[in-house]
Amino acid sequence: MKKLLLLSGLLLINFSAFSQHKKQFKVIHKVKTSPLKNQQSSGTCWSFATTSFLETEAIRKGKPSISLSPMFYVHPAYLGKSKKFIETKGKSWLDAGDLTFSVLKGYETYGAVPESVYNGIIEGDWQHDHVEMDNLIKTMISSIATSGYGRIKPNSWKQSLEGVLNAYLGKAPDKFNYNGKEFTPRTFADFYLGINPKDYIEITSYSHLKYYTKSTLKIPANWGDNKYLNLPIQDFESVIENALKKGYSLAWDGDASEPNFNFEKGVAELTKEQESLKITQDLRQETFEDKSTTDDHNMHLIGKAIDTSGKTYYILKNSEGNNEQGGFMYMSKKALLLKTISVLVHKEAIPETIQSKIY
Image (cartoon, rainbow, N blue to C red):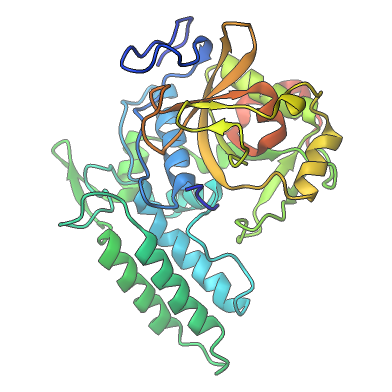
């Protein structure tokens, strides 16, 4: 999608380096997770959020904490998006953003690489900066898709695209050494993560889709026509609550463009009027259809907290740098229920009463 761009228990978040006026929270649940990372000037929140999710799942499974390369999944995602864009003659998605599906598919097909081995920053550069690369790829692939000459040369465009990706991100390794052993991306993923992508499911909640079944959610970034499990809002909320309570995190996809989503302060709320409303299925549907809720950002949902007045918030790892909450976002419960497009979670985090209705 487009970039708008640990430990369980009770504790009071306090970062003394910041202003004494920053909002205070008490944590109710917090999943043990890996350190925050910064996507900088790249539209890869989808990969940062999902690799953080995979890192956290590995920790939950008893594996050592590692830092995965989010950029390792940019290569296959751009190849897939470009192929679809050419096949549809320019009618599908070709922006820098994407969805959790692309990371899971990349993991399943290719494996994973530690960030220390491949960080996607070529020698001489100092940070992730994809503006020039994204523009170049879009111009090049758009020209191929809409050329009007009929026959497309698959080897030529793939080699050209891979050349651009390698020039800006560096070539991803086929083999590498890590902790004194040689790995391929596949053997590294199997040894250090041991994750089966088929154990995970993307869940949404909209009334135009059939409940308790998987359907294709028509959002721009879903260029691969991926399917989501659709649940009523009450069950959608129950999955999130049950997951966090049992130590599972969730990869979050939603709308972060609201005026009261303050990334500097690390607090995301609706307007005062909306915060006073009950968030219903009809309201979710209305904001989805009028496009006031869009999928413009990904984060990693790792916990739940309350503020000093007792109001409920959810804790999300963001990948956009530091802020008054140490880089985390605290999203009000009503904002989460209204502005979440979908969440990715382990199937075992779904309550049995809900699992029994799925077909």
